[in-house]
Image 1 (cartoon, helix red, strand yellow):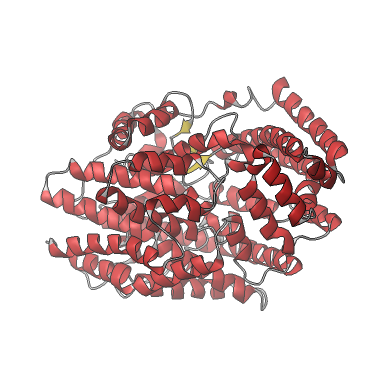
Image 2 (cartoon, rainbow, N blue to C red; image 1 turned 180 degrees about the vertical axis):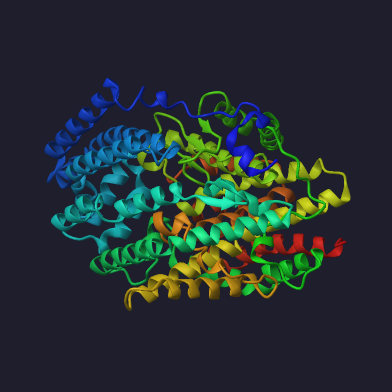
Length: 601
């Protein structure tokens, strides 16, 4: 079955679920949505009048927690409004009515949130001794101790209130506007493959086809369309890199990724250690693996369109939706029946949007919405084993978000370093379940190979992405970059990370253009590598001693952002500051490659 066929109908997958957004609001023109927006504006005005300039006095009188709780009520409401406007847009971003609705909603939310911008700025002007005394005296306030600690880290980079308001107000016409342009451009792109017009998801899907002529045709179609739009993507990249440089310069950040590290609640030296460990492991991991894969394909080098090609022995069956669901839930349930119970409502409540569609955002995500509602998962399901792994991944996010919701709007947000834990762990559980149920040696070999490739894409590829971003943002500080310069940075980093086993075919130089993380969340990508290495280390602990592991794992997920990663990992005997932590995670990938080499056909 071709990707084009999958795009035209979904009967071959059974009944694919779509979102029911009425759990948030009945419709974008409903009275309920309008009332919610009016209520949010009113609450923001009341919050400003009640608390602005008074937080120090509230701290002294032991009433600061009231302001925090009021901020959470407002945050839950505005989060629900913003989630609804984004999710309806994500289903069809090329629809001008949906795009206008999201744009208007974002402007309204930005305007009302300006009234409460003072809150965190003013909190950081309270003296440390006064705040510490208030926390010590009030158990309710003490719940937010980690949040206060993270706020304090941002204190040296705060601007005065008027400048903060200016930065905030202009975000609608600054990076947010460029993000939207990127999304709408990407969603509207068309790719001609063997006489058929496909969207991005369906074309990327063909890179995993068994037929090499299909893979090459898809690669060439992608390269052709990306090249035709490279000037626009270059301009967007230049503008956003400059926008970030201006913000960093005004705030006084030393390193181009420091603001991301702060948002992730992780120290720069931890990320540097991760990057160094992975880059040093390139020869043992990706370089070695892709040379082996080239031999399996009877080639001196893999072409760029062969990198994710399935092995000739791989299981290329199309999985219908019900089988995919059963596979993932059974894997979750084998680890813990409670985990499967938390996951099960996603499949019968309109919480998942699975079909591909023209105008739908590419890729997959889990949107947490707000604690008073529930997460929504977006997929572009095309029936392959990798789509099952994507379902397991995003479902892990959803489970994590549900379990952490009890922490409330402020503390439920998990730092990105730990936000990938449940997702990657869910993938690992599903992979192990599939492997246990595979008895044919050739299919087992292919499944192991597929898992190694997923790990390389999660660890090696994402650290290479991080390196690419660092070089682009560093070079942009010397002046605007031409497309050819960005292309060369991309090729240099790809060659370093992939090694001599993969060729850089003509057209590959523009494949940086479609990576949304570069646009939406600069330097986010290392969180995937962090999460994969962390889960590898966690899983090694689980295999050594499973008794009590599930209980400790649930406690980690339920904590959300209420504790630092060092505190959450301590019960498992893990410390991200220890260089051996990364070696342990990377060694699992190396062992799988060893197994492949030992059983290589």
